[in-house]
Image 1 (cartoon, helix red, strand yellow):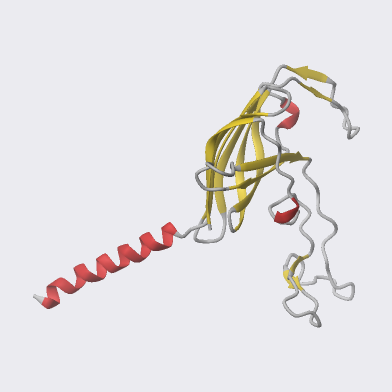
Image 2 (cartoon, one colour):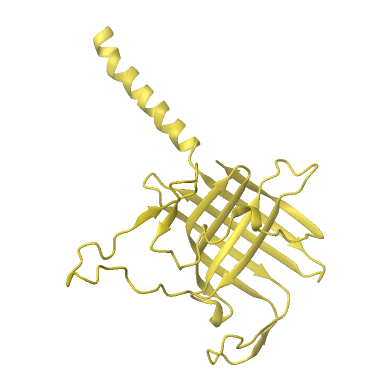
Length: 214
C-alpha cells in the first residue's frame, strides 16, 4: 500500500510546488478608468506576466477621449492632424517589479492614430492595496524606437568571435555597485529610467484596481 501511494504523494507534492512557483511569479494587471483636469475620460487595461525563462508576455490597451493634435516635432515628415480622442493597443515585452510598483514596456501594434503604431510605450503603476486610504497610481509615455550604436569588436581581429556577445560591467572598487549591461541597451525598456523617477499623474476622479505581485 505504501509503495502504491508514494507516486500519488509525489504527484501532489510536485503539483503543490508548481502552484507555489506560479503564485509567486511576478505580474502586474489592472483596469483603471479616470479623468484629469481636462475632464475627459481615460481608460487603461493591462496584464503582464514574467515567464519561467525570464521573458515577459502581456497586453495593454489605453483609450482617451481628449482631442489630440499630432505634430511633426521630430522632422520625420508626419502631416499635422487632429483626432477627437484615440486608442492604442500594445504587446508588452518587459516587466520590472519593485515592491508595490511595476514598470512595463512594449510596442504599440494598433492605434486609431496611424503615427502611434510602432512606438515604444512605458507604463508605470503603483499598487496601494484596496484604495480606501491611498489610491492606486499610474503614468505612461510613448517613445520613438531607437537604433543601437555600432557593434563592439577587436580591431586586430578580422572576424572577432565576440561580436554580438553581452556582458555586465561594474565598478570593482564600489561595494554593491549596480551592474550595467554592455553594450548599452538603446531600446526603451523597463530599465531605461530608475523606478523611483516616475512621476505619477494627478487623477481627479478614478475607479478600478491595480494589482502588482512580486
